[in-house]
Length: 270
Figure 1 (cartoon, rainbow, N blue to C red):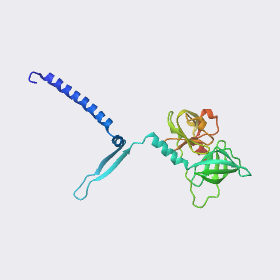
Figure 2: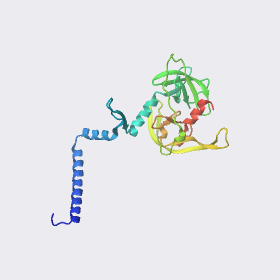
Figure 3: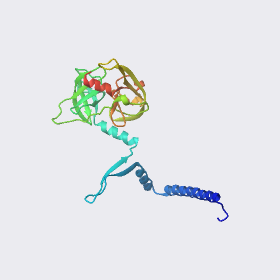
Figure 4: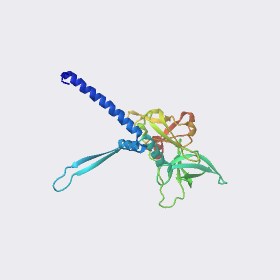
Protein backbone atom coordinates (compact mmCIF):
# COMPACT_ATOMS: atom_id res chain seq x y z
CA UNK A 1 0.00 0.00 0.00
CA UNK A 2 2.88 2.37 0.75
CA UNK A 3 4.14 2.01 -2.84
CA UNK A 4 0.77 3.11 -4.32
CA UNK A 5 0.09 6.68 -5.25
CA UNK A 6 -3.24 8.42 -4.60
CA UNK A 7 -4.69 7.58 -8.00
CA UNK A 8 -3.89 3.91 -7.63
CA UNK A 9 -5.43 3.82 -4.14
CA UNK A 10 -8.67 5.34 -5.48
CA UNK A 11 -8.83 2.80 -8.30
CA UNK A 12 -8.21 -0.03 -5.84
CA UNK A 13 -11.05 1.18 -3.59
CA UNK A 14 -13.42 1.37 -6.56
CA UNK A 15 -12.51 -2.16 -7.62
CA UNK A 16 -13.08 -3.53 -4.11
CA UNK A 17 -16.46 -1.77 -3.87
CA UNK A 18 -17.51 -3.07 -7.28
CA UNK A 19 -16.47 -6.63 -6.45
CA UNK A 20 -18.26 -6.48 -3.09
CA UNK A 21 -21.53 -5.28 -4.69
CA UNK A 22 -21.49 -8.13 -7.21
CA UNK A 23 -20.87 -10.74 -4.52
CA UNK A 24 -23.64 -9.26 -2.35
CA UNK A 25 -26.14 -9.33 -5.24
CA UNK A 26 -25.35 -12.94 -6.12
CA UNK A 27 -25.64 -13.99 -2.50
CA UNK A 28 -29.02 -12.22 -2.07
CA UNK A 29 -30.53 -13.84 -5.16
CA UNK A 30 -29.27 -17.25 -4.11
CA UNK A 31 -30.77 -16.89 -0.63
CA UNK A 32 -34.16 -15.79 -2.00
CA UNK A 33 -34.27 -18.78 -4.34
CA UNK A 34 -33.60 -21.09 -1.40
CA UNK A 35 -36.20 -19.58 0.92
CA UNK A 36 -39.64 -21.19 1.24
CA UNK A 37 -42.49 -19.68 -0.82
CA UNK A 38 -44.07 -18.00 2.19
CA UNK A 39 -41.06 -15.67 2.54
CA UNK A 40 -41.27 -14.58 -1.11
CA UNK A 41 -44.98 -13.93 -0.76
CA UNK A 42 -44.35 -11.75 2.27
CA UNK A 43 -41.80 -9.67 0.36
CA UNK A 44 -44.28 -9.20 -2.51
CA UNK A 45 -47.01 -8.12 -0.15
CA UNK A 46 -44.71 -5.55 1.44
CA UNK A 47 -44.02 -4.09 -1.99
CA UNK A 48 -47.74 -4.00 -2.85
CA UNK A 49 -48.85 -2.34 0.36
CA UNK A 50 -47.17 0.66 1.95
CA UNK A 51 -48.19 2.66 4.99
CA UNK A 52 -47.06 6.20 5.59
CA UNK A 53 -47.52 8.13 8.81
CA UNK A 54 -47.85 11.87 8.49
CA UNK A 55 -47.57 14.06 11.60
CA UNK A 56 -50.26 16.73 11.30
CA UNK A 57 -49.78 18.28 14.74
CA UNK A 58 -46.52 18.02 16.72
CA UNK A 59 -46.55 16.84 20.32
CA UNK A 60 -46.89 19.42 23.10
CA UNK A 61 -46.67 19.22 26.87
CA UNK A 62 -50.44 18.82 27.07
CA UNK A 63 -51.11 16.28 24.28
CA UNK A 64 -49.31 13.76 22.08
CA UNK A 65 -48.68 14.27 18.39
CA UNK A 66 -51.62 13.84 16.03
CA UNK A 67 -50.83 11.45 13.19
CA UNK A 68 -52.66 10.68 9.97
CA UNK A 69 -52.07 7.26 8.43
CA UNK A 70 -51.94 7.21 4.63
CA UNK A 71 -52.31 3.69 3.24
CA UNK A 72 -51.52 2.92 -0.38
CA UNK A 73 -52.56 -0.44 -1.80
CA UNK A 74 -51.62 -1.47 -5.33
CA UNK A 75 -54.46 -3.52 -6.84
CA UNK A 76 -53.80 -5.60 -9.94
CA UNK A 77 -56.11 -5.93 -12.96
CA UNK A 78 -57.39 -9.35 -11.91
CA UNK A 79 -58.72 -7.92 -8.64
CA UNK A 80 -60.43 -5.06 -10.48
CA UNK A 81 -62.04 -7.44 -12.99
CA UNK A 82 -63.36 -9.73 -10.25
CA UNK A 83 -64.78 -6.80 -8.31
CA UNK A 84 -66.42 -5.27 -11.41
CA UNK A 85 -68.19 -8.55 -12.23
CA UNK A 86 -69.36 -9.12 -8.65
CA UNK A 87 -70.77 -5.59 -8.44
CA UNK A 88 -72.97 -6.10 -11.52
CA UNK A 89 -74.18 -9.72 -11.51
CA UNK A 90 -76.93 -8.93 -8.99
CA UNK A 91 -78.30 -6.32 -11.44
CA UNK A 92 -78.29 -8.72 -14.41
CA UNK A 93 -81.73 -9.81 -15.66
CA UNK A 94 -82.45 -12.72 -18.01
CA UNK A 95 -85.61 -11.85 -19.92
CA UNK A 96 -88.08 -14.36 -21.36
CA UNK A 97 -91.22 -14.15 -23.45
CA UNK A 98 -93.98 -16.37 -22.08
CA UNK A 99 -96.70 -18.01 -24.20
CA UNK A 100 -100.21 -19.04 -23.17
CA UNK A 101 -98.95 -22.46 -22.03
CA UNK A 102 -96.48 -20.69 -19.76
CA UNK A 103 -93.51 -21.82 -21.85
CA UNK A 104 -90.57 -19.44 -21.64
CA UNK A 105 -88.34 -18.42 -24.55
CA UNK A 106 -85.12 -16.55 -23.89
CA UNK A 107 -85.31 -13.03 -25.37
CA UNK A 108 -82.15 -11.36 -24.11
CA UNK A 109 -80.42 -9.73 -21.17
CA UNK A 110 -81.31 -6.59 -19.30
CA UNK A 111 -79.93 -4.60 -16.39
CA UNK A 112 -81.61 -2.96 -13.44
CA UNK A 113 -81.10 0.81 -13.65
CA UNK A 114 -83.21 1.86 -10.67
CA UNK A 115 -83.58 0.38 -7.20
CA UNK A 116 -87.37 0.21 -7.67
CA UNK A 117 -86.87 -2.40 -10.40
CA UNK A 118 -86.71 -0.57 -13.74
CA UNK A 119 -84.84 -2.57 -16.37
CA UNK A 120 -83.21 -1.49 -19.63
CA UNK A 121 -82.89 -4.12 -22.34
CA UNK A 122 -82.53 -4.59 -26.06
CA UNK A 123 -84.65 -7.75 -25.91
CA UNK A 124 -87.40 -7.82 -28.53
CA UNK A 125 -90.61 -7.60 -26.49
CA UNK A 126 -93.94 -6.14 -27.58
CA UNK A 127 -96.63 -4.29 -25.67
CA UNK A 128 -98.94 -7.32 -25.77
CA UNK A 129 -96.22 -9.82 -24.82
CA UNK A 130 -96.13 -11.68 -21.55
CA UNK A 131 -92.63 -11.07 -20.22
CA UNK A 132 -90.78 -12.60 -17.29
CA UNK A 133 -87.34 -12.00 -15.84
CA UNK A 134 -84.92 -13.86 -13.61
CA UNK A 135 -82.65 -11.96 -11.21
CA UNK A 136 -80.20 -13.92 -9.07
CA UNK A 137 -82.31 -17.06 -9.52
CA UNK A 138 -85.63 -15.40 -8.60
CA UNK A 139 -88.43 -15.13 -11.21
CA UNK A 140 -90.43 -11.93 -11.65
CA UNK A 141 -93.26 -10.82 -13.90
CA UNK A 142 -92.25 -7.86 -16.08
CA UNK A 143 -94.18 -5.12 -17.85
CA UNK A 144 -93.14 -3.05 -20.87
CA UNK A 145 -93.15 0.60 -19.78
CA UNK A 146 -91.48 2.28 -22.74
CA UNK A 147 -90.38 1.17 -26.19
CA UNK A 148 -87.60 2.99 -27.99
CA UNK A 149 -85.71 2.70 -31.24
CA UNK A 150 -82.82 0.84 -29.60
CA UNK A 151 -83.85 0.02 -26.04
CA UNK A 152 -86.90 -1.03 -24.06
CA UNK A 153 -87.76 -0.10 -20.50
CA UNK A 154 -89.38 -2.77 -18.33
CA UNK A 155 -90.63 -2.72 -14.76
CA UNK A 156 -90.79 -5.51 -12.20
CA UNK A 157 -94.33 -6.30 -11.13
CA UNK A 158 -95.81 -7.57 -7.86
CA UNK A 159 -92.84 -6.50 -5.74
CA UNK A 160 -93.23 -6.78 -1.99
CA UNK A 161 -93.27 -3.52 -0.05
CA UNK A 162 -89.81 -2.16 0.76
CA UNK A 163 -88.07 -4.45 -1.73
CA UNK A 164 -85.14 -2.80 -3.53
CA UNK A 165 -82.85 -4.04 -6.28
CA UNK A 166 -79.17 -3.62 -7.04
CA UNK A 167 -78.58 -1.33 -10.00
CA UNK A 168 -75.73 -0.64 -12.40
CA UNK A 169 -73.67 2.53 -12.59
CA UNK A 170 -72.96 4.23 -15.90
CA UNK A 171 -69.60 5.46 -17.13
CA UNK A 172 -69.13 8.64 -19.15
CA UNK A 173 -68.05 7.21 -22.51
CA UNK A 174 -66.66 10.57 -23.57
CA UNK A 175 -63.64 9.53 -21.49
CA UNK A 176 -63.15 6.13 -23.16
CA UNK A 177 -59.78 5.52 -24.82
CA UNK A 178 -58.49 3.18 -27.50
CA UNK A 179 -56.85 0.05 -26.01
CA UNK A 180 -58.74 0.59 -22.73
CA UNK A 181 -59.57 -2.69 -20.98
CA UNK A 182 -63.21 -3.79 -21.01
CA UNK A 183 -65.16 -6.69 -19.46
CA UNK A 184 -68.07 -8.41 -21.20
CA UNK A 185 -70.89 -9.69 -18.99
CA UNK A 186 -73.19 -12.06 -20.83
CA UNK A 187 -74.69 -15.59 -20.81
CA UNK A 188 -78.03 -17.17 -21.67
CA UNK A 189 -78.23 -19.66 -18.81
CA UNK A 190 -75.36 -18.65 -16.56
CA UNK A 191 -72.99 -15.71 -16.30
CA UNK A 192 -70.26 -15.60 -18.94
CA UNK A 193 -67.35 -13.19 -18.63
CA UNK A 194 -64.87 -12.25 -21.31
CA UNK A 195 -62.22 -9.54 -21.38
CA UNK A 196 -60.84 -7.41 -24.20
CA UNK A 197 -59.88 -3.90 -25.20
CA UNK A 198 -61.49 -1.02 -27.07
CA UNK A 199 -60.41 -1.41 -30.70
CA UNK A 200 -62.42 1.37 -32.35
CA UNK A 201 -64.52 4.35 -31.36
CA UNK A 202 -67.23 5.78 -33.62
CA UNK A 203 -68.36 9.36 -33.14
CA UNK A 204 -70.52 12.06 -34.65
CA UNK A 205 -70.74 15.84 -34.45
CA UNK A 206 -73.71 17.10 -32.49
CA UNK A 207 -74.87 20.68 -32.18
CA UNK A 208 -74.81 22.09 -28.66
CA UNK A 209 -78.31 23.13 -27.61
CA UNK A 210 -78.68 26.91 -27.57
CA UNK A 211 -75.39 27.45 -29.38
CA UNK A 212 -74.00 27.55 -32.90
CA UNK A 213 -71.09 25.31 -31.93
CA UNK A 214 -70.94 21.52 -32.15
CA UNK A 215 -69.18 18.84 -30.16
CA UNK A 216 -67.97 15.34 -30.93
CA UNK A 217 -70.15 12.67 -29.32
CA UNK A 218 -69.04 9.03 -29.06
CA UNK A 219 -71.82 6.90 -30.56
CA UNK A 220 -70.35 3.39 -30.55
CA UNK A 221 -67.60 1.29 -28.97
CA UNK A 222 -66.02 -1.60 -30.83
CA UNK A 223 -64.08 -4.17 -28.81
CA UNK A 224 -61.95 -7.28 -29.16
CA UNK A 225 -64.22 -9.42 -26.95
CA UNK A 226 -65.17 -12.82 -28.38
CA UNK A 227 -68.17 -12.34 -30.67
CA UNK A 228 -69.59 -15.81 -29.98
CA UNK A 229 -70.18 -14.79 -26.36
CA UNK A 230 -72.17 -11.67 -27.23
CA UNK A 231 -75.97 -11.88 -27.05
CA UNK A 232 -78.75 -9.28 -27.03
CA UNK A 233 -78.42 -7.08 -24.00
CA UNK A 234 -74.81 -8.01 -23.18
CA UNK A 235 -72.90 -5.15 -21.61
CA UNK A 236 -69.28 -4.09 -21.44
CA UNK A 237 -67.86 -2.70 -18.21
CA UNK A 238 -64.75 -0.71 -17.41
CA UNK A 239 -62.42 -1.86 -14.64
CA UNK A 240 -64.30 0.34 -12.16
CA UNK A 241 -67.44 -1.74 -12.74
CA UNK A 242 -69.31 0.98 -14.66
CA UNK A 243 -71.36 0.19 -17.76
CA UNK A 244 -69.75 1.50 -20.95
CA UNK A 245 -72.27 0.11 -23.42
CA UNK A 246 -74.89 -2.48 -24.33
CA UNK A 247 -74.96 -4.70 -27.41
CA UNK A 248 -78.00 -3.71 -29.39
CA UNK A 249 -78.60 -6.33 -32.02
CA UNK A 250 -76.21 -4.89 -34.59
CA UNK A 251 -73.95 -7.03 -36.80
CA UNK A 252 -72.38 -9.42 -34.28
CA UNK A 253 -69.13 -9.63 -36.26
CA UNK A 254 -68.46 -5.94 -35.65
CA UNK A 255 -68.62 -6.15 -31.82
CA UNK A 256 -70.08 -2.65 -31.67
CA UNK A 257 -71.89 -1.63 -28.47
CA UNK A 258 -74.31 1.26 -28.03
CA UNK A 259 -72.91 3.65 -25.44
CA UNK A 260 -74.06 4.13 -21.88
CA UNK A 261 -74.68 7.80 -22.71
CA UNK A 262 -77.27 6.75 -25.30
CA UNK A 263 -78.93 4.53 -22.66
CA UNK A 264 -79.10 7.46 -20.25
CA UNK A 265 -80.54 9.69 -23.00
CA UNK A 266 -83.25 7.05 -23.56
CA UNK A 267 -84.03 6.94 -19.83
CA UNK A 268 -84.39 10.73 -19.73
CA UNK A 269 -86.84 10.57 -22.63
CA UNK A 270 -84.73 12.76 -24.89
